[in-house]
Length: 329
Image 1: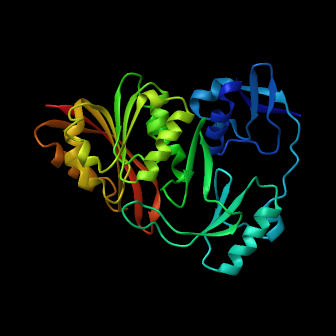
Image 2: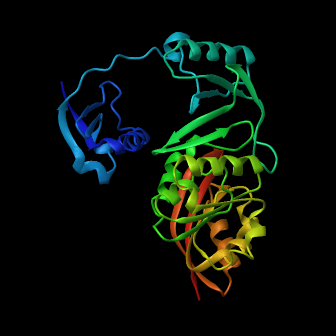
Image 3: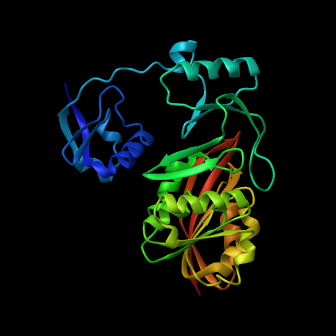
């Protein structure tokens, strides 16, 4: 049967497949195929294909995919699940229901080594949570995102796979030769891909274990020579790295405002700041914009280039990002 497919080089296949999945364009009813150096990825809706891939759409015969046995088919209802590497995460207050879902996940065709249930909210300045292990034994996994691999332990570091598309948006703006500073870097989901694009990256995090994983991930992805990983408070690097940043990532939504004075010290003559915030729906961007301009003072002109709602955070509250260009006055 002939279906529309995105045709790209084999080495780009996984990254493109993830982008198509994020855009809800991926056709799960037909098989992906490879012919020579080209991979053909079926799409269900060509209109949903990202614009830069539109020219790669071709018609091609594709075999129908055998539908896997899903947890929903076993349970009779659709459970709320999140994938992180070979870990499946459920979010259930009812222990009996959580274990029922875990049993269904392990009996299904979902590739999974461990099923976890959230046992606490994110806690403390290291932003970690406690977990109930419902199946399997470990909390360490390798997560793959847009062609990169990230080793991490969800019990020791903060990581959200839900932010993959937002991270990719920012990462694609990074240029070779620029200096980027990730002030709250975690295991490196911004820092490592920016280094892959040729940026020299200084990555800081208060969590010592996150920095250990970040260094490992820089090695895994072949960019250890372009990533400087620093364990500690981002305010402590301001003297050594003052006036150097062409790009700053400030992904600490509840507290990033407390670090704006440091961000201004780190900024070079022309610096883009990716500032993440949690605000009420009535004025999601105003507080962050005012805070950045106040911190910039007379030293910089602050121009808001992008206002973006990343996701809903709580009733009437949004997780937002402001891309702000600081130009030295």
